[in-house]
Image (cartoon, rainbow over all chains, first blue to last red; front, side, top):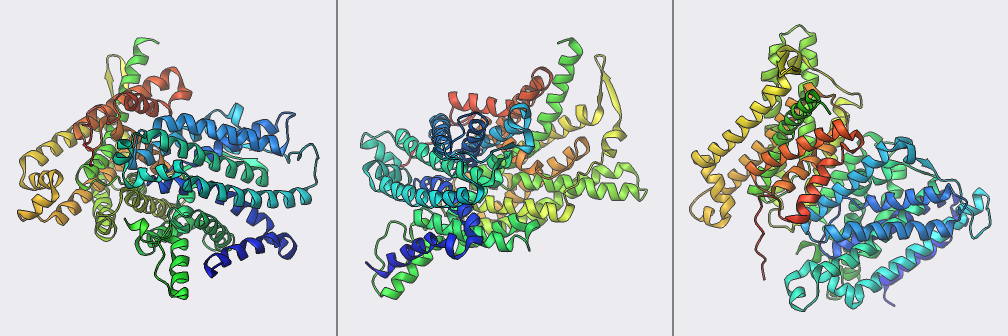
Length: 326
Length: 301
């Protein structure tokens, strides 16, 4: 195993010991990893050359689905996860059927339009959604066991970590699979894809449903960790944040999405106190800097350093920094 | 629904359409020439509104005549166009014309994030409301219905003048023809000596100024508060997409369609009011993916 893979694995191992070594970080990292799962969804679409400014839609849909179910007697974490993910995937299918007809600007903006529609529904129909105050999501049971706060949060941390690793692995496998390879061809040359007899729309739709489901799982985990869902879950600021993390991590890199989410949440937890009023501004400036000067993001920087250290020719990895410039 | 309500709904829709058109026309003009969708366009609208409402509030409180509200709107629009639009094009967009569409979207989105916070830093979270311009022009009675002159006559007239002016400018003046030439084929235009960079800068400044003017004109009719920029960019995109990207005359018709549809919903199913513009857009795009007046793009092989 090369040093290139050693550091990320070491970082994952260290995460395992966070609850023992640094319990103060546990909640923060739970949220960061949950967001990382959601960001993977946005990253996935970037691999097809598309950017969605409205993926908070699925984040919000699954969170609200979880909150509605938590209000019934079926209040169990496993059920919340299944129902929320199913809700996000189903709405991803419905929205996807429409947006996969478009690329580029229209794809990004139509996603934004859908999320704004959902957001205004959440705000207006307050009899059902609680309006701007949102809904409470009481701590659910886990497979029938009702846990106290501390063990529940510990369990949620490890569950989120396991899901991050599992879903990250799954997404990488998806991208490596024939469907995933076709999916990425939407970015490089869609017309040739159709000449092969493959429907570009269907291919993009498959990836879109997966990306919606990933955002949905992230949404349920964040909602369960915070115990409340509000319309801000589906607001454009949340979508923008996801896009920001995806670009920061490395446009198209799944490990980069996790690294980006961890870096973003940790910096935010400490820096936001000093810059609460100008947080969007800081993000915007940083986004510009990354796009203009480090288009490979964190993953690109890491690959470049690893290449230099190992003094080898840059290997043609799937997420080399050059790719984002094409 | 009786006769007066129908008239009121039509008047509401008309004045609303005029406002949305002012913003959408800048967006579609910039896209037509630069091939960039300016996500920060909504922020420019909001800043135009904030400038007019806050400066207006200050000078009227100091005792100046309310008639100054109208030149103030033009000044606010010019400030937005020159002080914001100019640097955005010159410092940022100029670097990314050759980059993929996704990156261009991300750059203007970053500008949007920055400008949203700049608004809150400068003007805070409290709403501004300054309606001297609206009150000064008074009301008018049309077919038994009272309505403000500002919304019923001034706004539609300004929108119509903008539409006609832009059309004449693009077809009849030298600068306008240069813009059209660069839009048609940038390389060929440069080959015959047209300074495409200047044309891009000019177009962006004009487009940004139109967004600022839209905001300035909207400020007497509504309170200016954080978040109006985000709503306006989505709404004006809906108009532009319904019309077809880059279609100036089409944007006017789409704005009317969406404005009237929205006000019809306001009087019949108020909870649907925010949804109607998007429903119209989705319905149009389902049938005509390139918009009402757009032409299908040829695909590169």
